[in-house]
Image (cartoon, rainbow, N blue to C red; front, side):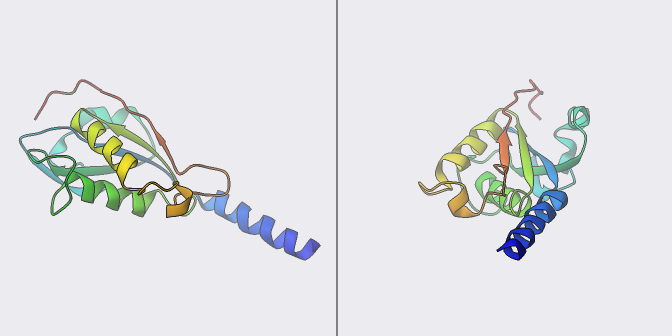
Length: 144
């Protein structure tokens, strides 16, 4: 029993020590295509505003002229799903900073993608953390 407890404790401690904190940026409506999920701010939507936070930054871009509630190539829902699945599971934590339609797209994904289940049922948990803490911020950035 003690051996099982120690092994389990070491497992959870390892998960906590290896967790990565990410800041996910989701842009708003734009006349430009900012498509991509990764460490590059495609077409520099966020500009200097992304510098207000430190740490591991992930940019979620999509075709800013499209409906932010749709899936497909260069679509907001596809790229939000990709980012949150890639970076916000397995003990990692995420904060989401969004602007305008990016907030709408993020809220839409959070309310529909889980399919009526809990986040933990979809694997978005760690031993002690909910993997994302939504921080909806309208930075009043100009529309590109």
